Image (cartoon, rainbow, N blue to C red; front, top):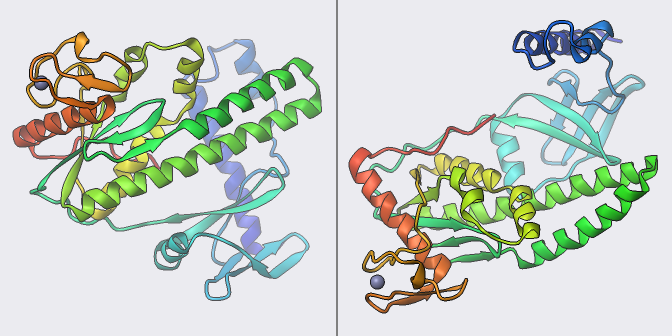
Length: 327
Ligand SMILES: [Zn+2]
């Protein structure tokens, strides 16, 4: 190998051992003398053939206009390899790419994952109002301004997939396991894509109207929803945390403040007069206030309550409370 890839390989091996050492120290691999720890330390670390491999600018060059890359391989340099990405990502890549990219192979497809350091705009210190975002199963997200993002067809796909999965799991063969893995990844990609689209729409709208965004604290969501067992498993599977993270980081980029508030009773409280009663909710979708008589879609009512709470919290503290994005 030439010098640069050699440096990379050494770096990768060192990183792996450093990580293992950190895991041992943190107790992630069991107590001293435990079989698991023994297993982890008695064998050298091995690397899968298709494991992610880091490339820097000396082993990988990008031709943005032609949408090709030239990449070093053990059998020489491969030139003019086409790559594809969305127009927005191409723009990010061109303007903000930082040094290294990881090359990975998943289900027979090759991916290049690049780090982009995108500058954040200064947070809007004085938003004109707040957009509350209610999260749920039937509608993935509903905003206080009435935007609804349905999950119906996704939920149907999930159900079909889970039936198929059950069949494959029963088979328990090597090839069945491989197919299962591929299905899981495909589903995760699909959910991720949906979360990207929803978060993008919500943030764009908040930015355009000079509003901040209010999200519910997710710690409560699983306990709060009382539904059939099947729906509960969907709630676990659906990436609400991911959606919240996406909204938070897209908002930071454009200076939209994001607040996280306690969602307790948002579904039973009237967003017009504050009257709180379980009887305000005759059906899943309808909210009818027993006190002032207002009729609203139940999710919109909940989202409006979140927006109110956000306004109060901002007036008290005036700063974003969304957790910092994870790298
Ligand atoms: Zn009311």
